[in-house]
Length: 274
Image 1 (cartoon, helix red, strand yellow):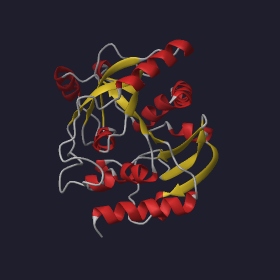
Image 2 (image 1 turned 120 degrees about the vertical axis):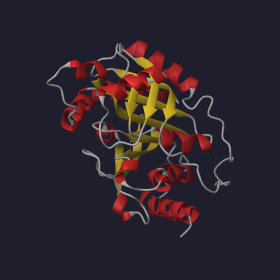
Image 3 (image 1 turned 30 degrees about the horizontal axis):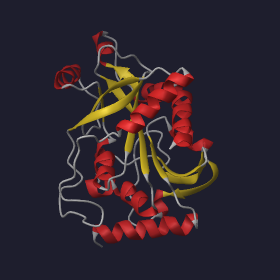
Image 4 (image 1 turned 180 degrees about the vertical axis):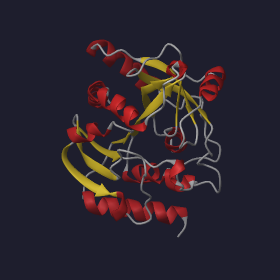
């Protein structure tokens, strides 16, 4: 089956489960941030394993399903569990969910992740709005171009929509939610970064580092979908100065969970104003 056939077959399967609902906004919920899905009203869950040709995530805390329903008055389709390159899939499958969302009709993509803070001013629990990224993963657009979705050479001058960033700033000021801004560096994983790598990425201009998000945004921008991205800083570079420090997956999820309430307020209000 060709990639196009895989995309449309998967989209048809999801459509068959959600009926006449028309998702307006796609949401990718990162590690520890799946709680936002609990706020979705009249939800329909579609497990990934029930979608033909669909991959599943191996990440801790990922539930591997779409949730379709209403959030802040908008019909949304949320990924409760994203696919990562380190799961062993080709990029065409890592980004398949975004292609399916496009076929289903989304007009915006909101993405979140847990990230390590390379910026020495950052602290665990900070929310960082992503203003740009550096990609150290295979580009998901390599291979024959899907002309039905976008151009061979898509512009990436503003991968994260300035209007959505400005709207998030406005909401955060109203709600008293402190926001950082910065550049997200994406790499393959699955091992966490060494102190030397943290220092290297900081010199490159990165404020946070993680293993996701950028492929999804590249594919969304290929289809001219405006994107908004935010990272929860779950560990920080300066912590590695402690001789007893180790980067622990469960601690990262706990830090992300602690920021979930602020993330939920921000995302729900952003949806109201789209």
